[in-house]
Image (tube, rainbow, N blue to C red; front, top):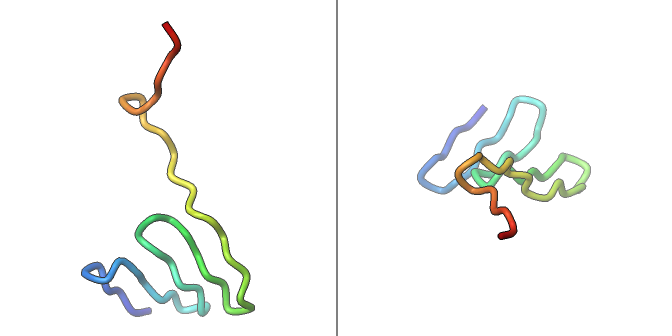
Length: 47
């Protein structure tokens, strides 16, 4: 595993590139889009 927080990514032992924005690039080239959960302070409600 390689961890480079200053660059925003980590290489896992299974070959997956994990990005700080929660996106992933799998060894077969498949992309997993960023999927940040919303915290309660970020949820907006209609008035």
